[in-house]
Image (cartoon, rainbow, N blue to C red; front, side, top):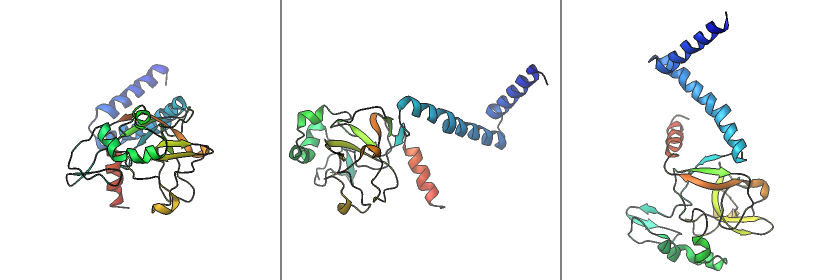
Amino acid sequence: MDTKDIFRKIKEAWNWVWNSDSVLSWIAALLLIFIFVKFIFFPSLSLIMGTSLPLAGVESSSMDHQIVDDGVLSLCGRYDGEKEYIDFDEYWKTCGGWYEENDINKEEFSNFPLRNGFKKGDIVIVYGRFNPKIGDVIIFKPNQESSAPRPIVHRIVKIGDSIETKGDHNEKQLEVNNNVLGTDETNIGNDQVIGKVVFKIPYLGWFKIWLVEFLKIFF
């Protein structure tokens, strides 16, 4: 078989995968997409972004500034105003006390990246080559004692011998004894840090969340 025959066969196979309506062609197309994403796209993106997790789906509401339950907005454990949306000033009236007690004022917070947080179901883009600063939103691996199944995405609120974070929506920091998962965000080592969130893509992560919830029905 000469080179022309090889290219002809490849072209015919390519046309069959993408233009045929058969079940086998659909399976082949999905398999090719999986191989491309798993072994080409993600490794390349990881190399460019300098982290093992360049894209992450947000699976909790701990960074959300707009949590509505039965028409009542709940925020930082104590806001019960009947509003569908609050701006940054209202967020600070509700949640700013904790930050001020921890030496972060309103002006400083207003200049933080992603100062309005993000929602469950968003996708975040993560960059690994950075020097942590107060106000950065980072993704990090839970402490060994935690039973949290996935990395956590919270905002840096203090840097000393270790890093401390807090979720914008949460009333206070997670400590081993105050949450069912035993997660501690008051003593994060550099080896736990995966990267810094540099951008968010709204809603795109809902597909993964729905898929995981669907699979839980069967497994």
